[in-house]
Image 1: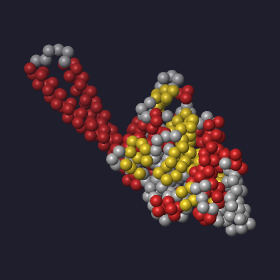
Image 2: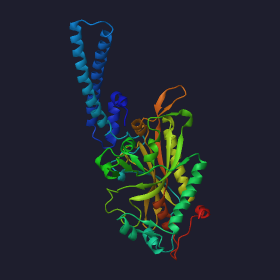
Image 3: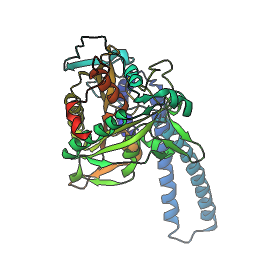
Image 4: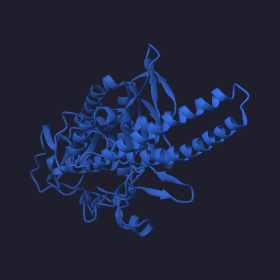
Length: 409
C-alpha cells in the first residue's frame, strides 16, 4: 500500500511512477477526492464532538437540548458516511501497485527486461546434450506419468538420487546461510486471507487465479514461504538494533500456473507444487537498496559454487510483481534446452507490504517507521535439480554430482 501522505503531497510523482508500470493513473484523482472528502468530514466530526463536550459541562436549557439532539444526529450521519468513504478509499489504495525505484528500466513486459551481465562458462559437450526431462526419465528419478495419474498434470515424483539431491542442496545452502546470520525457519503453508492480502498477492482477479484458496477455512496455500514469513510481525514494533532481521525459510510452494498454458509442459520445470529455500529480510529504509544487493550476491555465490553458468537480469517496470519496487532475476543456462531459465528472483518491496501489515520499527530516538521488506530465492529445488541434470550429464547417460554437494550425499 502506498502512503496516502505521499499521494496527497506528490500526486504527480506517484502518477509518473504508476505510468511506468502501465497503470491507469485516473485512480489517483479518485483517491485524492475521497481523501479530501474524508478530511472534511473528520473536521466536522471533531467540531460536533467538541460542541457536545463543551455543552455537557453545563446544565442545558430545553432549547439547548434540542440543539444537542440535532448535533448528535448529524454526528451519526457523518460517522456512517466516513465509514463508507474510508472503506472506498482503502479499496482503491489496495488496487495500487508499488512505485518502481529510479533505476528500474521502463518497459511494457518481460521483453523489456535488462540483461546486466553473464557469469561462468557454458557447458561444452562433445555430444548432443539431453533435456532434463529425458535425463529424469532415463535414470528413473523423475516420474511425471504416475504423478499425473495420482494428482493431475504439472506434478512430479522425485525419486532416488533426485530426492537425495534435493536434501543435499538443502543442507548445502542452509549451512552457508546460517553462517551468514540467517535464522532458519519452517513456516506454515496455509495462511489467513487477511495475511495474504497484506502481502499484496490477491489484489486482482489475476492474482487470485494463481492462488489455491480453501473457501471453507478462508485460508490460502502459499506460493512461496515469504508469504508466510512476512506477516509474522504484523501489528508489531521491532527494535532498530535487530535490523536487518534475516530469515531463511523452507517450505513447499503451491501455484496454479494459471497463465502458463502451453509453457514448459514436459517434466517439472513449471509445476503446481515445489520446494524452495527462501531468503527474507526486514530492513531499515535507508539500507534496503544495500540489502537487496546483498541478497543478490548471496544468490550468485550459491550458483557459482554449483558451477552453473548464469546471467543476472533486472526486471522492467512492466514485469514487476505488484508489491515489488525492484527485482533481479538469475537465469541459469540449460544446455539441453539451449536457453537460460529463471532459477532465482530477488525483490525489494520497500514499505509496500509492511504498511499493509503494520510492521514498524523504533528508532533510537523513539520515532516509529515502517520497515522495508525484501525476499530472494536461495534454492528453488526443482529447477536447480534440473539445471544440475542438464549441466552435469555425461555421454553414457549418467550425471555427475557437483563437487560442493558430494559431502551431503
